[in-house]
Amino acid sequence: MANIETELLHSDISEQLSSWAERNGVSDDRIVQDLLQDFEAEENLNIWATMDPFEYLPQPAPVQGAKLLSWAKLTSTIRNVMVFVPVALTWEAVSKATEAFAKFIEANNATTVNFLEFWQNGYDFLPSFWTISHIATLDFLIILGVIALSLLATFLNGKGSSLNKAELHEIDKDRLGTALALKMYLYSMREIDKSNIKEGVASSVSALLTATSSLSKSARQLSAVVAELQSGVPMINNFGTKLGKESEKLVIEVGSLTAALSGINSSITGELKEAVESATYGLDLASTELNTSTHSLRANSKAAESEIKTLQSLIKKASRGK
Image (tube, rainbow, N blue to C red; front, side):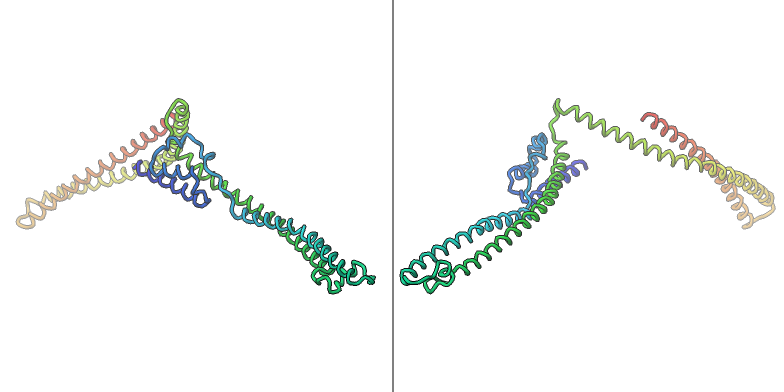
């Protein structure tokens, strides 16, 4: 039976480790794979017992919070790039406007149009896309996008950090539970040497003290039950005494009836005589059985009282021995 319980525990701890690794995405970890293989082959467990599972088990990484933090990082990167887009766009527009303005001046020497007016109107030399009003509008929209991305990045970063913290708490709790189960199971697999024999003795003494305390508690409970039984002994004795007296009276009556039947036995013949003889014999048997039952009841009552007193004495000795 002990071997069956050990096998069940061995199977349970192996399944618990496998479920934990799969649940936390560390099934491919080399430590976990080697440990599961040794559990399956029931080898090298004494070596694993010398190591601390709180240290060698891998630390799973959070998933949900990490995704949001990754999105926050990407959003921040896009925002940082977009900050320079309005500057680049504006300088490109200046370049296009300057080039077109030079051509316009060359074609219209007598004109009095200044550069800003030309940049605004274009005068068919500058495409409308590069006019100053259009570029300013684009820069404004891009800056609004930068602001929106900044807010989004801040939100994603805060939400991801919050989820990360909560998920890490659950991961650590799950990991510690698995590590503790491994520690408790592998504890009995250690090789006995000078470094741990004292610890083993201390564990045995602690277990013995716990068992002694439990035994003392059970003894007190049993003593209470015996005390209740003892209180019922006088009632049993009184009942036996009354029954004995009634039995004695019945024996006397049976004796009288037997004597009466014997007196008339000589004066009858035939079938009536046989009936009287049978009745007399039956009454003799009933008288004998009644006497035997009375004595047995008294003896059993005294024996029960004696057994209860002996049991109380043993309980008191056990309590003093603790």
